[in-house]
Amino acid sequence: MRPPAIRIIEDEHSAIAAVLYALRYLVKQMRDCGEPANFPLLRAILDYVVSYPDHWHHPKEDRYLFARIRQRTHDADALLADLEREHRIGYPMIEDLTNRLIDFQNGEACAREAFFELAGRYVQLEWAHMRKEEDLLMPIAERVLDKADWEEIERAFRENDNPLFGIKPKDEAERLYQRILSLAPAPIGWAGKATRGS
Ligand SMILES: [Fe+2]
Ligand SMILES: [Fe+2]
Image 1 (tube, rainbow, N blue to C red):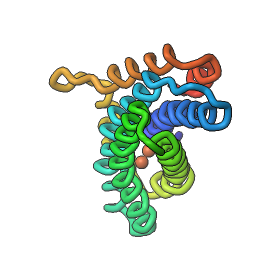
Image 2 (image 1 turned 45 degrees about the vertical axis):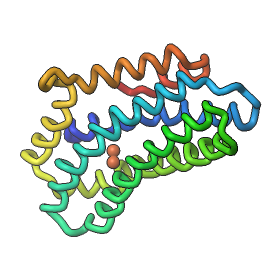
Image 3 (image 1 turned 180 degrees about the vertical axis):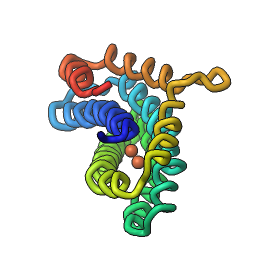
């Protein structure tokens, strides 16, 4: 049986991928079809990415999954270094993206194109990153981690669901996710509901 922790991580990837799909769709509609910008929706998408994948999903991978694999084998050293580098470059990209969105909303010169360009790069980076984790890292993890390792990783990821000092990251993510769906035009709302996975 596959360890439940893998399913939890894949479900989180599905939720993140659905939000990234929404971002890519909006950029395409604005850029190619001249749709006006929906700033509240774009802002809600960036808030979600900051609050969930950046603050919770990636750090848990670093601290538990990656650390444990590194203790068990050197086979994944290069891959883990690559994945950690991608986590690190993702954080400032979102900060940049938020700043470019503000410039775009303020009508500053070239800000619209700059936002589109960076949004496209961010979506590509994150998609490729999650694919790499699922297709390349998980098979190694399944081979080298034992039952106790997986239980520890599962506990860490399930902690996302627990209120800790009043912080409920999954509730917060769900609230932001619902806000995205409520603000999104139908094609995105449907895609989000269809691909959420959890
Ligand atoms: Fe990751
Ligand atoms: Fe991940």
